[in-house]
Length: 180
Length: 270
Image (tube, rainbow over all chains, first blue to last red; front, side):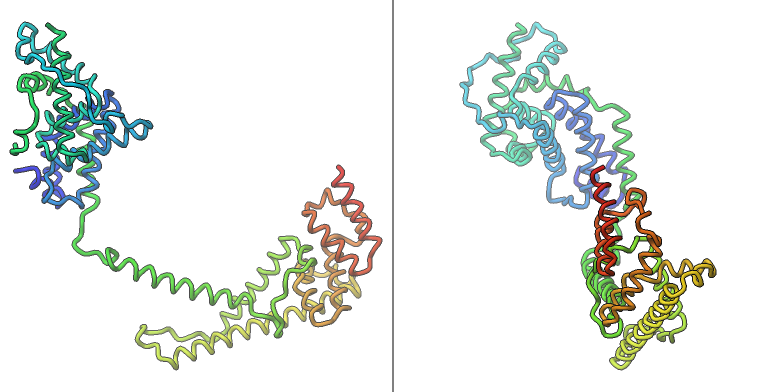
């Protein structure tokens, strides 16, 4: 059963459908929030808010919209609210990246480092990305959304997302090269 | 995955490393809390297909309630401000300031009781069967009946006031004869020389009676010897003491007015 059918079933009162949806998407949303805000306690609070928003807003859900787009849109908005509440919307959301992207050697050449260590290092590198670039990377990896859908979720243009992703990948490659 | 994803800048190797971190999950108690909340929502708030108070019914229902409330309020206000003996409702006078709140309340309670008694004895309006049964004739009859009822109440109030004036006059003529009477009468006397009575007598031009009532009022509330009244002990606002002084001057009791003024000045200095 696809996400949209499950959500419609939940709207009609099938709590089991919600449970299935929740278990299907909880990991992606949680990691997106946790890695985006960098604090586990805050991430848990935001995570709970996101799912409670889904529960409360179920009457407004229409099957014409893809469930994951709606879910990540709510998560993105909650994150932005969190930034604003702490009186800072990261500047990276306002600015387009302008720095030159250097050609980097592919990461798959970093063969001698074990994968676990690489994964830890990658999380460090993700944490160092500007928020907007980090969000684009996390949404791509966690949500499985398309370029257009990510643009829709974040309320930005398709080219902006593309550009942020290019910069994010370049920065991550550069960061991981330190492992060599 | 849609075709737009093909245009997404990607790095397979980075993605595969990133997937190593996918065991990071929310805590089990958080899962339980969210799922339980979602279950509660569906259990506690089913969405009925039709509810009598949903959607387009809310506004008309609210308007109807507002109309009923407004009508009740207007009816109540009419009853409260109906003039006595054709006089316009008098404005607040200085003498009214002399009324301690307890006395005012007592006056009101007496009136309320009388109204209640009259309402019990007055012929009752036949209950309407339904909205459709209200004909113009029935409606006129209802209005006439209400007016009659109000007239009865006001007539009773007027009579009570006349009786009260007589009691006051008697108490002035021979206070000792009145005072030893039953406690109920004594308590009644405390409420009798009301500001409203003094005011009504003045408006009628019965200055002598008005002055007598005012004197009785002062004596009953402040005693015979005003020099013994201590403004520090009697907890009245300064404005009310000033009103008392004005009333005393109207009665040409200048010496007493001056004495009270002196006491007040002393209190303010202290």
